[in-house]
Amino acid sequence: MKKVTLGSTGITAVQNGFGALPIQRDSTEVAVQLLRKAYEGGFRYFDTARDYTDSEEKIGAAFAADDGTRIGNLFRDHREEIFIATKTHAATPDVFWKELNISLSNMKCGYIDVYQFHQMNQCWKPGDGTGMYECMLEAKEKGLIRHIGATTHKIGVAEEIAASGLYETLQYPFSYLASDRDKALVKSCAEHNVGYIAMKGLAGGLINHSDAAMAFMTQYDNVMPIWGIQRESELDEWLSYMDHTPEMTEEIAAYIEKEQTELSGNFCRGCGYCMPCTVGITINQCNRMSLMLRRAPSASWLTPHWQEEMNRIEDCINCRVCTTRCPYELDIPKLLRENLEDYRNVLTGKVSVQ
Ligand code: SF4
Ligand code: SF4
Image (cartoon, rainbow, N blue to C red):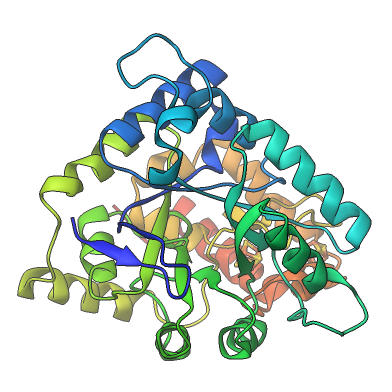
């Protein structure tokens, strides 16, 4: 597994990052085991967020405690080898300082390597009147954070951040389903010496061949993928690539090309940013049902539970609140109706899937 350096941060770590959102759903005991096993297996870059409920606390429990095993207290003995990134949703300086202190206290890490504004809707700059960028500078001067990062789901904002010269890292979705504009963003980050943190490397569950996902990432020297990990089997899959990193062979390239053809255009990534729906539709699953029916065993999606969920699409009142929140600017009510029609065709046998 090669190492990548994240732009001007100088952070150099194996190109296999740990996305700590899913460990929210684990018990503390399981999360601690996963995180420590990840470190032992070579993971060095860990990404979480203040918004991920107790994910930060689990990182603290894993790395700032000595559980009597041979790797001991990692933050005490190996702090410089571990890179911790977290995020704040703060929109005012008061909330910024409050959240930063909570994150430091939760993780007991002394300082945060990469502190990111979470899901930015605008590129905060010095002197813009919000005081937010100044907070980052002050936190850096005080040694509470080492690098200033940004995350967003809006391509225009991401492009501005990349070119601004103000942010040392940018986190944005990136996978082999990325558009040309997304790829240009990665290039722009490289040109501006901004480290690129790739979220949703499996496109929200649509990509089900991790070797192809990994082979794609290895083509980019400034990109750190952070794979969401909840189970030991998932961790083991990514760990297996530490020693045997998939390469972009002709076979994988052909597979990716086929996938790109099949999944091109407007499709729901399942991120859930559009939720909650005014009438309770589970948009992030129902809106990609046609894809899921064809990319996973369909039986699990044809249960009475999912039939009921899909039927709820008929309740859509077209208020379009969801569309204002979708970073991919999808016409959600229209896509939902298309998915419902296809679902019913599959259910009644008019259309067959595997
Ligand atoms: S437009 Fe339909 S799917 Fe979207 S929030 Fe309104 S009711 Fe829900
Ligand atoms: S409709 Fe848009 S915001 Fe909602 S889950 Fe799909 S991609 Fe995400």
